[in-house]
Structure formats: structure tokens, C-alpha cells
Amino acid sequence: MRADANSTFWCPKCNEFGDFKKTKEYLNFAPVTIFSIERFKGNQKLQDSVVYPVKDLKLLDDIYDLYAVINHQGASAKNAGHYSAHCLHENGEWYDFKD
Image 1 (cartoon, rainbow, N blue to C red):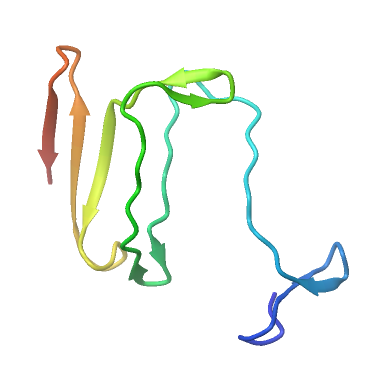
Image 2: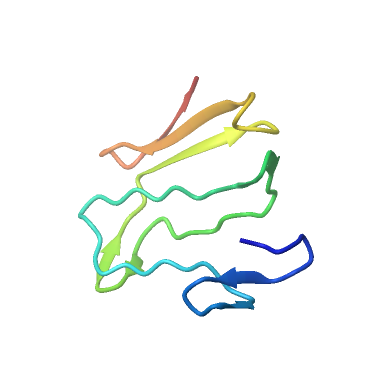
């Protein structure tokens, strides 16, 4: 909770104001793991690029290969947009799917 728009965040556990960063910690991942990357701040779509390896993504002690990506094109996911997917077939070819 913020006291006002220019202040730092209130921590009820610490009982004080301070600057905090939201983090997540994982103990393990499933053999097939899905990541959803939030690309919006309110109704505004972020324009930052997301870079990830297609092969040999190391997470903890496991190594993963990418085999599908879902993309959203448009200004806002809440009101409008177009979705497409890129999927890796077992023959090694990438295929595009559009709604």
C-alpha cells in the first residue's frame, strides 16, 4: 500500500516504509513448464524486448528447450488485439498459427 503516489511502499511485516522489489523463487520445475510474461503496465503495453534461448535454457538443475511461443499484437490485451503462435514440430520445422 502506498501513502501517496510519490512515497515508497509500506511493509506491514517490517512496520515501515521502504523501497521493495517483487521477486519469485522456485524450488523446481515440471518437465513441461509454461511461463507467462506480463507485458502490460495498467492498460499500456510495454515495448521492451524479451530475449530467451531456443535451446538449452538452464533453470536450476534442469535444461529446457523452447517449443512454442504465443504472441499478442495490439495496443491492449484487455480490449483488442491479435494472437499468433509459433510451434516447433517434431520434424524440426517451426510453424505459424494465427487466430
